[in-house]
Image (spheres, rainbow, N blue to C red):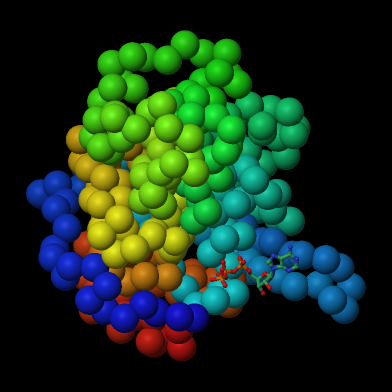
Length: 264
Ligand SMILES: Nc1ncnc2c1ncn2[C@@H]1O[C@H](COP(=O)(O)OP(=O)(O)OP(=O)(O)O)[C@@H](O)[C@H]1O
């Protein structure tokens, strides 16, 4: 896997809430999760019995070498893919065996997504993109919450622009606002800084941290970048489809050393 040069982001300790963590409930959890792609001789086991919990109100990162199963784990947790065996829970809800229609509803109403490639609709304005998940769910926006997140993200002045009229960093901030507008139980972010320059990446990570500290949001992020991971409260390490460790209050160096130990 490619580890970005250290120093890509300012090496400052990201602010985390002080003190010991309160007794946790998991916002999302995997129990004995097995995922096999294909069948017969060409079958690939992407997850080999993963047990992992992602605490509510915390920022969690998932890391590991390329092909270790990070995206597969996130997709199963987020109800975008179905595991071969094992269970996935979202809060109190068991996603295992849930019919497709209900799963779609859960994703729409209870989960926010941020992708590396922004995934904004080009014909809609920033505001229309942000409000789309609410519109699809037939829910009314909360104007105060909309104002809070668009101001905190620094895009309040850009809401009438289309994605092509925004910088990459601004487009990703619109995507983050879209992920937060429904006040989801969990935001899943897949390499959210992967397509951003270092300043936009730092801004985005600071905002994700702020959304956890100030708004009580739960964020689960897949990343290759040890500095990005150091903004999280904990890092879950994967190797060959298995849990290979966990780092609490990670620093970039601790993450880098752990990845080197995994051959990453
Ligand atoms: N749709 C698929 N069909 C077959 N094999 C797949 C499929 N998706 C993933 N895999 C395989 O499953 C394993 C885990 O893939 P996954 O994408 O979850 O890893 P990853 O850790 O996210 O990798 P990367 O860091 O390169 O994105 C890999 O061996 C991959 O080739």
